[in-house]
Image 1 (tube, rainbow, N blue to C red):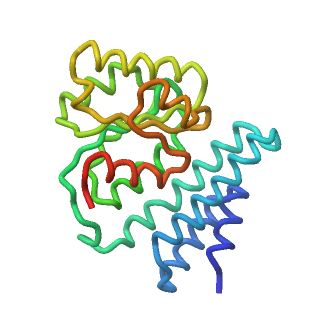
Image 2 (cartoon, rainbow, N blue to C red; image 1 turned 90 degrees about the horizontal axis):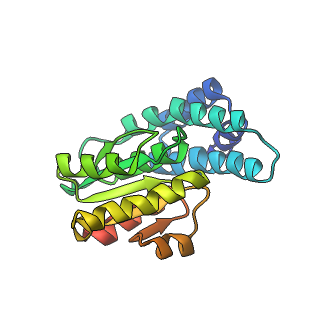
Length: 212
């Protein structure tokens, strides 16, 4: 019988078809969907990211990792019984600042949705004003930003400035995460929370929005 460890290895090796098939087998065997997601998909992607950080992988490997995760995640989402997660009636605008990278952002989106939040995913290549404009239009309760390369760090600072200038900073808790970010940087730039891993986004959202 396949194991979650086998799935982690396939994701780490960026094999989407094999990983998707194994995800189906693990779900059919009755394994916990969240454990499959965290210990199989997320840990496998972390290994790809670690190899890239150590210069043992290239950008194409990151892209392949994202494709592999994308093949598996919808299967896991479907496995969660309707109504299993409490609905919090809280809207979160989520997107990637400037760049087209979406692996981490998509994982955060998945976990927030499973956690009962209404996620308004604005995708990639966003400007600071895109986050503000969508939050106002949708009546959001929080803004979550993925920052994955250095130029986007400046744009995150710009977003905080826009919210202050338009006198809505207190209206929107803002959380941030991504490969180039650190907790110290996030605090310095005025973020309300920083996450090192995708699952941290759920914890931050619950704490900052006051939901169980």
